[in-house]
Length: 143
Image 1: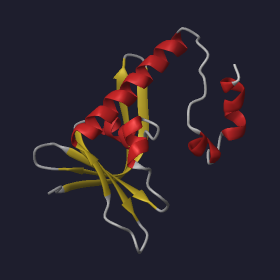
Image 2: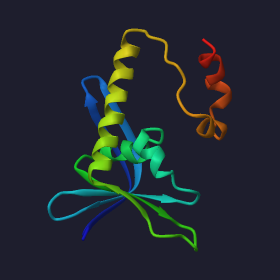
Image 3: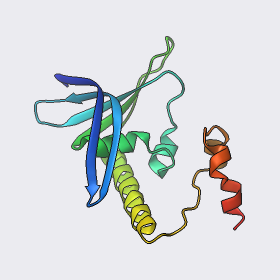
């Protein structure tokens, strides 16, 4: 049971000295043991589990890193005909958090050394990205 609930919670956390992450979680639940669960409401389609596990979709992992002591992240569809919520927990969540945290730390270190940052994302993800014209991933991929 998750007796304590916070909604539309703005969070900010220092990931490493000089590196802060922030964001707003739709719902943050806490149980008596201090464990937390993040619930992300979806009006559209939730990300694919494969994309979360591979680190391609980092929203759930980012929320887990922000809140701290998160033992599960749940995507809850607001559609009338929605299926059961997709829950990411256990080793899957831990591995995803470690991967995203490591990538953020490496990118931050590279930026601090004035390294150029190549665009990331697969073609499916990039196809629907709002920043497609700004990012110019094709130019990065060409060299």
